[in-house]
Length: 118
Image 1 (cartoon, one colour):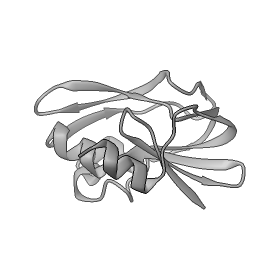
Image 2 (tube, one colour; image 1 turned 180 degrees about the horizontal axis):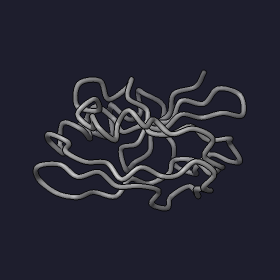
Image 3 (tube, rainbow, N blue to C red; image 1 turned 180 degrees about the vertical axis):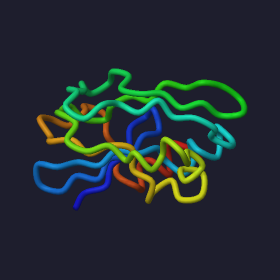
């Protein structure tokens, strides 16, 4: 499994031709308490760099951008009733899983992302 980060603060865990997507711990911390997530739908296609869903926190509504391109094969519906799971475990609370078509152009490994958010 390969863990990568986008400059827009989403993470992607790539395992073969499947990839799970979530938001980074840094992003959830900056957003504050999440109160709603507008999840994408199974079967939707996403394109790297384009918005695929949004989250609402006590501070603002923020678009999330796809770090990869592909077709959504699973959605973490547990987040519909408990978006705060992202706050308590950002790296464990994945948003969706895609059948991978291609990776985004500007993905960073963990060390590069840590440097990026300094």
